[in-house]
Image 1 (tube, rainbow, N blue to C red):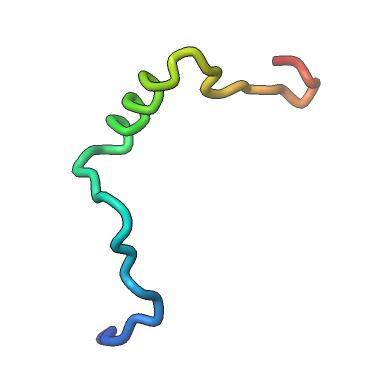
Image 2 (cartoon, one colour):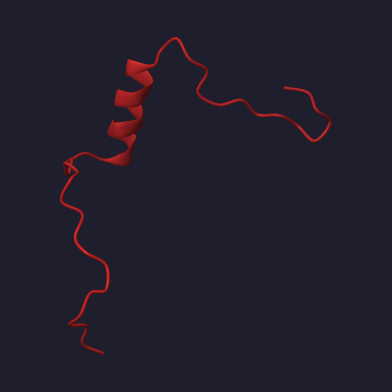
Length: 47
C-alpha cells in the first residue's frame, strides 16, 4: 500500500525536541519539583 494523501494538515506551531521520553520527564519533574508527580491509590482507597 502506498500512501500519498494526508487528510490532516501538518502541525507547524510546535517545536520538535530531539530528546528521549526519559529526558523529557526529568525536565518536567525538575521544573515542577514542588508538585506531586503521581499518587498510587489501592483498591482499598489507601495511598
